[in-house]
Length: 596
Image 1 (tube, rainbow, N blue to C red):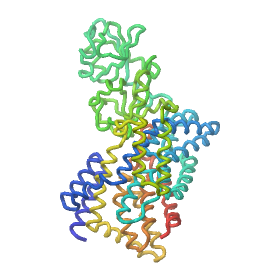
Image 2 (cartoon, helix red, strand yellow):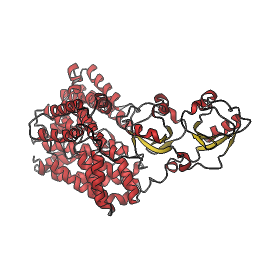
Image 3 (cartoon, rainbow, N blue to C red):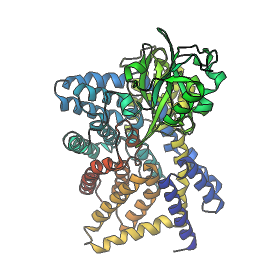
Image 4 (cartoon, rainbow, N blue to C red):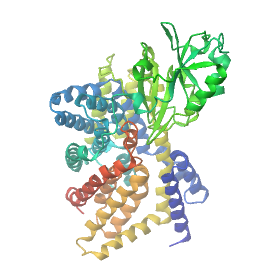
C-alpha cells in the first residue's frame, strides 16, 4: 500500500467522521474535501469541478423543478385523498391504499417532495381513524423509500450510480430495470408497515392539542395593566419589552376588542389584558418592574389562544427552505410571515426559551400562531410545510395538465431509448417555463442546492480513489473474503457483504455519499472476482436506499421525527427487522435478476 493511498484513506476516514458528527454543513464538508484533494494532487482542476457538469447531478437538479411543478397542480393530494376514501370504512385498507400510492408517486418524483405533501394527509388519516400519528408517519417515510427503488429517477442515488458506472464503460442503468426487485420490496415492505409496525411503534404523538403537545401552558400567561403601571401610554416598541425581559406580547385585549396585529404601535391603556409568551423567571421580572397584575392562575388553553381571527398550526422546515441556517431574528419572521413562533421542536428537544436566536435546521417543526387571513400565503411558501391545515383541490390554469404529463413522458421516452433522460428533463422544464406552469424564480427556490453542491463536490473523491488505485486495492481486499467459501458460492457471499456494508454505512451518512464511495469499490470487487459487476452495482443502489434504522440516514426519516414525536430507539426497533429482511431478500434475489 503506497503512502498516497494511505493518505487518501485517512482523508476519507476524516470526512466520514465529520459527516457523522455533523460538525459542519454537508455541502461545506464536500467543498473542503474537493479543494483538499485538488491541492494535494489527488485530482487535477478539471477533475475537481467535474461533478458540477455531471449528468446525474444536473438531472437531479432539473427533477427538483419538475417535481415542484407537478406538486403545484395538487393532483397528487387529490388522487391520494380520493383513492384513500375507498377504504374509509376499513382502517387498514384505507391506510394500505394511502401508503401504496405514496410509494408509487415516489417512483417518479423526489421522495422528500412526496413525503412533504403527504404528512398533512397522514395526520388527517390518523384523526379520521382515531390512531396516533406516530403509528403512521414512520410508515409514510418507509413507503417513500420503497417507491424510490422502483425506477431510475426514484432517488438521486440511482441516477448518481448510473452516471458513475458510465465512466467505467458499463451499460447505464435502465429506467425500469429496478422495477422487478423493487416491486417485491414494495410488497414485503407494505405488509411490514401494515402488520408489524403498528405493534412496534408507540402512540406518542397526539392530534388533539398543539399547546399540550409543546408543553406551553406554563409558558403562556396573561397580565393586566394596573393603574400604577409605567406601560400606560407607551408601546411595545417604546418600552422595549422583548429586549428587556425577553417577553413577547402575542395579543392585547381591550374590553371586547382583541388586537393581534400591528401590536408594536398600539399604546397601552389601564385595564388592557396582555397575552404574553416567555419564561417564568422573565415573567416575574416583568410583573414586578412594570407593575402589571399576574393572571397566571388562569391557564391559557388552545381555544383562548386562537381567539376569533387566529389559528394555531405547525410548520415543518422543508428541505428547500430559505430559513435553514438562519434564526427567527435574522429572518424577521414575524414581519415576513405575519406569524408568531411559539416553540421550536427539533427531534427530541422542544425549545421554549430565546427561540429567536436558534439557527433553524431542516425538519425543525415550528408551532405558529397566525391570523387566518395570513395562512394561505404561508401555505404557498416553499419555506414551511403546514401540517395541520391542508387544502385538497386541483389548481387549474392554462396548460396545468402539462405539468402532470411531463415526468411520465420523460420516463417513457428514456426507457425506449428515444431521448437521453437529461435532455428530456431539460426539454420538460423548458416547456413548463414557457407555459408558465412554474417560474424560473420558483425553480431556483425549489432546487435543493445543498444536495446538488454536496454531490457535485463529493464526486471527485471517487475519481481520486480510481486515480490512486485505492478503489482497486479495497475491492481486491473484499474479494479475498471469497477465499473462505467454495468458488461457486464466493460471489454470492461477497455480494451479500457488499449490500450489508452499504446499508449500514447509509444509516449514518448520506445515501449519496455511501454510493459515491462504494460504487468504484464494488466494480473493482467484481473485476477481482472475474464476474459481471452489475449485481454489485444494484446491491449498492438498493442498499443505499434501505435506511430504516436511524432518523439521520434518510431525509424522509428525519422529516417525520418531530411530528411523530419519535425517539432514536423507535427507529432502531422499527427499522432493524426491515433492514435484515431486505438484506436477506437482496442477497437471494439480486443474482436472480442480474446473474453473475
